[in-house]
Length: 173
Image (cartoon, rainbow, N blue to C red; front, top):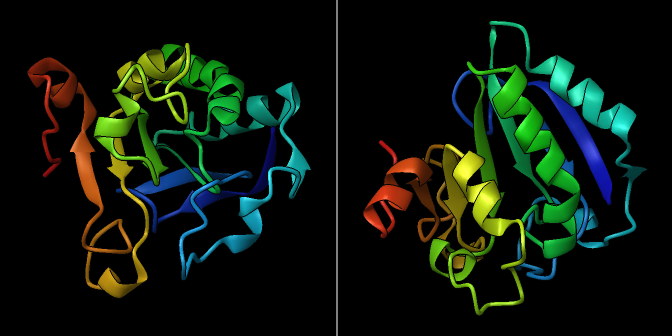
């Protein structure tokens, strides 16, 4: 997997001060995307164990609220397989950190075990490790800069633990 950039003190992609990892590779290709260069799966830098270790270390300070993964598309199956180790390690080593994932896939697509475009052998585990999923493709005609933590009004902030328990999407407050 490749990644485009890492922001170690990001305040735009989730609550508080966060580490944000922008992965490469996206098949959605949303019109008006703010990060179009990350559509290419070969864009950017190689995601290595050393990079993963740096990201993990960056979320350990108490002033860091958590990890946000966006892109590109972190829920492309090949990206999921590369990122599962990071999510596991953050949960194990940094209990105070929340995990946010931005995905153009909807909750319904991600939880549909028959949807091979985005559901693979690690999807359920990734969701079980996630606190908030910002779901849905960016829709330029629905762009709204007044929205918190999302770019267009069709996108939802989903409380993943509550949604898994309820068996239906529960919006985060």
